[in-house]
Length: 567
Image (cartoon, rainbow, N blue to C red; front, side):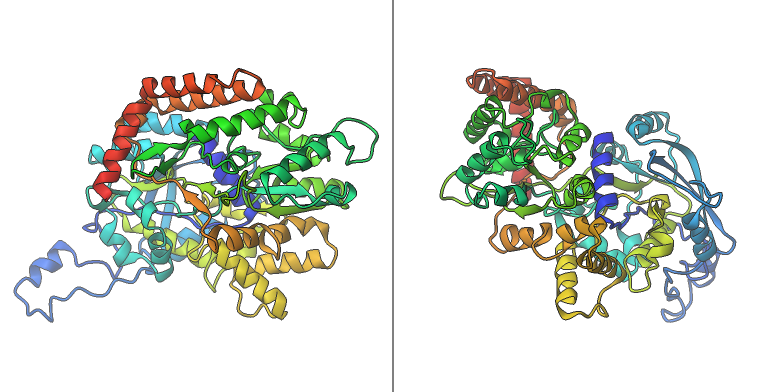
C-alpha cells in the first residue's frame, strides 16, 4: 500500500491539486446539530400528528455542532510534511477550521509514517479497535465489508453532501461501483482518473534539433532517435555518456515507465483487456508482450538503456535524467513537474517535448490506463457521528476547489503544503477532471482574461504567465497545463481519437487475487527484467505457463465471473 500512497502523493504534490474523499455512516446518527433528524423523544411526541406536522426539518450540511463533537481517526505522514508558527499535525489551519467552522474535534488514535500505514491498519483491523474514520486499501475494504463492519454511506451523502461533494463522488461510475458492496455505498471512492496515469513520451527536443532528427511519430522513429541520443554525443561533451531511454528496476509506476513503450507494440502490462471472444485476459501474458520485451532487450544490448537500471529506483533514474544524460522517457502527465523540472533548473537551455505513444505498425497505439481504486475512506459501523465526515469533505471542497476557495491559506504558500494536514487529503481529483482544467486555463491565456477561472485554475494560469515572462521555475506547470503540454496531448490523442486502453477489471480483488497477486506481480517483474537483461526470449513462454500455474488461471476465471455478472 505504501507504493500506492507514494505514487498518489507524487501526483498530488507535483500537480498541485487536491480533492479529498470522505466516508460517512448510519443515517440514524444525526450528530446533534439543530438541523438533524428529530430525536427519539420528539418522534414519539409527534407520532400522532398530521403528516404536515411530522415532516422533519431540512438538513443543513453546513450546520455547526453545538456543543462540539469528537471524531476519532488515524493517518499517515511523511518527511515532506512541514510546519510553521508552532503548528503540528494535530493543531494546524485545517484542524482549527474543523473546530471553528464545523464544531468537529479530530482525535488521532495513532499517526505513523506512510510506509508503515498498511501494516498498522492491518493490526488495527485485527484488534477491532477501529477509529470512526480511516483509509483502507481494496483488500482491507473487502475484508471489512464482508464482516459487516462498515457504515452504509448511501443516504448520508445525499442528505449531508454539498452539491460539489456529490459531484466529486458521482463523477466516476466505475470507482463508485468499486466502493459499493451488496448494493450499498460503503466507502467514498477515489476519483475515476483514467487519463492522469496514461503514459506519454517525453523527448529532449533541443537534442533533436542539434542532431537534425525528426520528432518520433512511429516506433521506427523512436528507435532511431534513441540510438542517436546514445551514440552521437547530444550533450556535446565529447564523451559516450548519454542514454536514449530512462529505466528503473521497478519497470512501471509513473516514472520512468516501460508500459508506454510496450503500448507501442499493442502490449498492455498489468491490466485486463478484452479479447475478440469477449473474454477478459491479462495483458502481461499476451504474445504482443513478447515482441515488446525482445525489442527492449535489443535496446539494452545496444547501450540505449542504462546498464545499471536493474538496481536503480525511480529516484536514482531521475538523477541521471536531470543531470542531462537521458534523452527520452515514458511516464505520466505529471513528469514535467518531477523530475523534468529539476533538469530545467540545472540547465535552463534544455527543452522537452510531450508526444503520444508511437506505434510499431499502421495501427495507432493505445495508451493503457487503469483507475487505481485502492484507497477508500470508510466509517466503522456504529460511529456516533458518521455524517460529520461528509461535513469535513464539504469544507475541504469549499476551501480548495469551490469559488470560495482560499488556496494561499489552505493549499500551500511559501513552500509549505497546508493541504497535507487535512484529514482526507490524498489526490482524489476535481469534479470536471484536469483535462477541463487545462482547457479552461489555455482559453484564459489566449483571451488574456482569467476572470472566469476557479482558484485552482487561476493558480496554474498565474504560474504559466510567470513562465511566459521568463520564470523557468514554472516551466513544469506550463508543460503540464499549457499549450502543447501533457494535457494537450492527452486531449488531442487519447480522448479525441479514442486511443485509451482502459483496464476492463476494476472490482474489488477476487479471492485468488488476495492470495496470489503479490506472487504474480513478483513473477512479472523478475521475468521481464531478466529478459531485458539478456535472458533467452523463450523465457517468456515458460513465464506464461508459470503465471497460470501460480494462480493466474484461477484469477482469470474469477475476473471473468465478475465481468459476466456486470454484463
